[in-house]
Length: 182
Image (cartoon, rainbow, N blue to C red; front, side, top):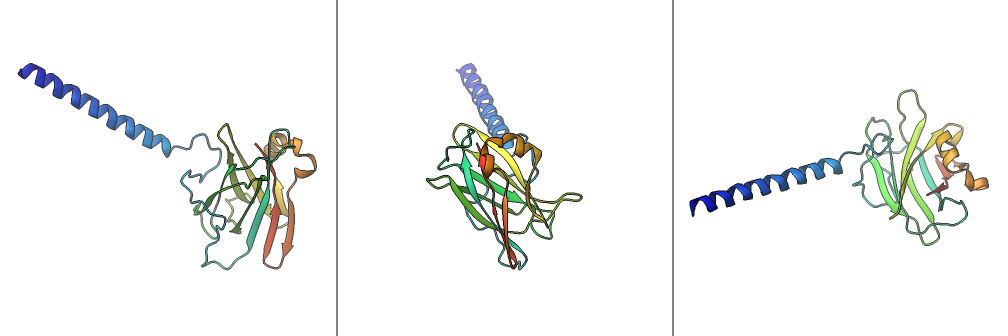
């Protein structure tokens, strides 16, 4: 009787340890963003369309656009868009959010003007995803407007006339139209 009880306890301890280790590995993987090419990504961002900090009074940016399929012709509804950037006057990525495209593939959010990394222009990072795939890209912003990277140009060429961002300036705010394929 003692032998079977000891064996039962050993197996229970082994099973519990395995579950605990597996849970810790899964937890560690949840915070490991090695598949993200950009610093500051956090998959646990809050769902919202307004990233502005009410205590900041600097320049604001309104970003809008459409998400197209890989052919650049069909709009994609209900696509998840995750955005993040360096907070103004900070080296922290506190400006982040999740949002979804509407039934016509449109998205819109407003944020404070991002800080920039040393030696680079300001950037807003994007992760676009649906149940089938995901895509990372970035929007470069400087005093002359919004720009795409060579990677974005290469990956989204089929957008043709919708490829390049359009910037409209008005007083202390900018509106940028930025389209992406998934």
